[in-house]
Length: 477
Image (tube, rainbow, N blue to C red):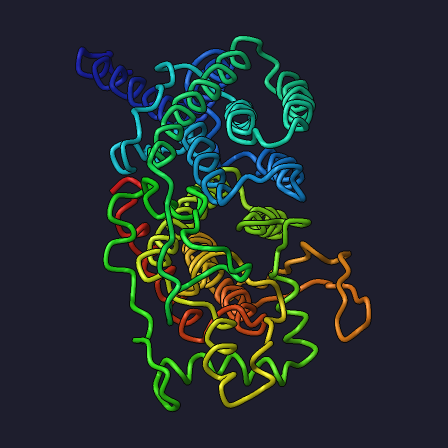
């Protein structure tokens, strides 16, 4: 037997060390994962934004949209053209309340017009994003939906019921209270910002004096001067949510011309011709998007559509928040640009030209009436065309094109068509642009807008939403 030398001992020690090192490498990943799991569990209790916004459903958004649409329906007092404004500010508040849980996304502070800096989450502290969203939407609804006494009751009922669910879900009073506080702080900042967007409320009354040929005048034919409500006449002076969103978006109407065969004459004559050959489906389309005060007036129908889109497509909370914000921003800036153009041109409505000019050679035209009531503001462009196309582009940018969805807003509503009471039913679309076209040309069939007002209105709304998409970056670059 050979004696054990110092060299043998050294080799033996190296072999043992190598073996232990290999064992450590084999065991290390498992032990490391276990350590991370335990640490994550601890962080989930008190520290760190462990659960991201995308891990939650959009149930909180669906529930608040149901309350908001219920409040907007057949209001006891008018809320003017504010529906798009409500959607924009509620959407931004929702997005900002959950954005810290979206690592790839950024705040809209610094991008939106005069928007204040948002409250910050506490570093290293956990938040429950549905609780943040609930607090923000509850407060925004209280602040903006002030046109009906039902607001306070419905808001409290939903806010309390969701808080009970989320308190149990978090299982941690500290996280729950911190989340509520953050959501309310965001809403308070957004509500204060919203209150500064319409300085025209203090401006002098808007007096309409020119009721000459080609100029818009209300169908009730009031004596001059006629005072147009400020909320309509000056709406185009409202601060846009996105700076520059309506720049270079407004086209011009046809130049006034009573000569048969001219672009202006033909455009007006087309309304008259279409009105004499309306199909049942065209009448149904006109009635569906008429949105008189007894249903969803002044653009509030888009709240119902947004609600249904989120219910049918069922996105996660992060995507729903982005959709709510972007659709609202595009919609309100579209309404501002549309009214700016309307009172820039003050173009007459079809009934005026048809009765006055076409009526010179056609006795039936002298007493012609539009199929649905003519709104009390100018023809060009069509609000419905601008609103629907801006809204459609925003939703397409979030959910994509070729999206099947159904608008059942008035599925159980009844209207008189051709002497019969019929259900308005549901309208199915294969894209958001299909819907926009349907809404825009419902106004031609209703006899209240010319084809050019509808076509150019759609272009204006699309340009506005494209500007919003170009200027506002939700994702970090």
